[in-house]
Amino acid sequence: MADQPMNDAGGMVEKRGRSLWLTHAMMILGVLVIFFPIWLAFVASTVTQPDIVSPPMPVLPGSHFFENYSRALLAGVNVPVATMMLNSLVMAVGIAIGKIIISLLSAFAIVYFRFPFRGAFFWMIFITLMLPVEVRIVPTYEVIAGFGMLNSYSGLIFPLIASATATFLFRQFFLTIPDELAEAARVDGARPMRFFVDIVVPMSRTNIAALFVILFIYGWNQYLWPLLITTDPSMNTIVMGIRQMFPSGDDIADWPVIMATSILAMIPPVIVVVSMQKLFIRGLVESEK
Amino acid sequence: MEKRVTFKGWLLPLALVFPQAFISAVFFFYPAGQAVWQSMFIPDPFGLSSQFVGLGNFEYLFSDPYYRSSFVTTAVFSTLVTVVSMVPALFLAVLADRLVKGAGTYRTLLIWPYAVAPAVAGVLWMFMFNTRVGVVSWYLGQLGYTWNHVLDPNEAMGLVVVASAWGRISYNFLFFYAALQAVPRSLIEAAAIDGARFWRRFFTIVLPMLSPTTFFLLVVNIVYAFFETFGVIHTITSGGPQQATTILVYKVYADGFVGQDLGSSAAQSVVLLVVVGALTVIQFRFIERRVHY
Image (cartoon, rainbow over all chains, first blue to last red):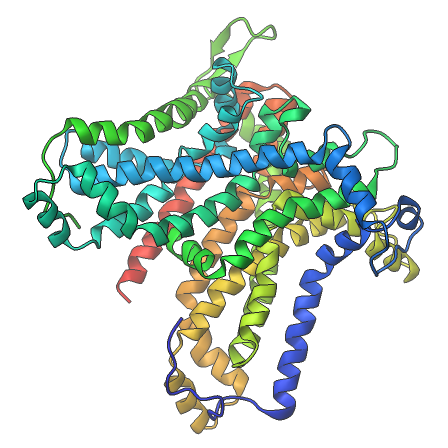
């Protein structure tokens, strides 16, 4: 964000009075419209099934918050939502940490060494940038099934860390680390890994944190992949599990529990995004470069 | 750009790149290669052997009216998602940019939907428009309009577009807001002195200066609409009614996993591969150009 030392609030382009209030009013209206679906889901998660199935449902929260949420967390529909949240947590953290580790290592090798096949390797990860998992689902599924990794955490995690965004980000950053530091380390006789652990990783911590935020949300919000490979309900993640809570046929869905689950599914990523807003925006802008 | 100072040795760097190389090879290159390979075969009905058909699967694919209509559906869908997510975002960013106080609070509130998974967004919107219990569909009914996205293809398309675009508004807002903040105040004030009113300043000065951001967002939003909206479509419409919302990625899933037509599904994967490749080239071309600004 640009600094604006000269831009006092009274600048001639700045609006005052009625126009300013109008801007605030439109902004608030925009926020309300955008928030409405979340609000409605929250209200639905605090009322009873009869309140919902005889429309219109109330627009203010009811008194069944604890009842609905404990029913969702402890019983759920096919499997307790607490179990699905744990699966999502393992998957999201696994993807974030796994991707960060393998990318730090390979970016370090690419930037600080000259080795055989370096160019080939560089192009290989460049190509992986281009292919989302959605495009290669059938063969990837067959690989996972062949390894017996269906319904397992490793099956959920590994195919999604085979991508190169993080490697590129770290490479860009390592190139900005002053050469004097590596020089000094070499003169001191420090081993490359010492330099990596003592200098490179600590200097990268902001980038690591920003990337963690982005990757955590990416992992938590996965849908198609868990849908394919977790046939056992106890391995379902929460984001894909919600859809499984709808009954097949003409039965009426248990709306309060489903809506409580939807709210629970968005809480962790929302907390991460809102509490680490600066890091998140930085990570977003950098990883898209 | 290359480092001048490097360490010696080749065994260590090879060991360092090994984890990524191995995972990419097993879970990425091998499956992608398999997709290309399988796209040239038709398995027999028992799955025991398969017959080489060369480009036959592709010929079949493009002569299939369902597949061609899925292309059209994808084009319509991604265009609408891009427009519906970018226009309100730009509008909100312009408003936020005019505020000195309070912009941070609005930003915090507007970021929320980005964190909501597309599949969860699908559930929220499907709930609002549910034909039996939905609040919005109920009020529409009171106004004399019968909403039924389960039967009406256009309403189904409208609903999946809005549900997909919703979370993207946050994302686009962040980029537009950052770009607006970077527009030099002196330019705008100079125009103001010359008597240009707000909208005139916006269209003649601000919007042209936003064009790099706008173009970047166009590409990313199209990529998003193509590949990351599966969750929305699967939760709301499952591609229906009458395949009206079956976008290409959904069709790969429906034919490959539900229909078990592996040859066709693999051929579709290869087509998508070409599409992503083209989009990526456009994106990189553009970014290279942006560097010269």
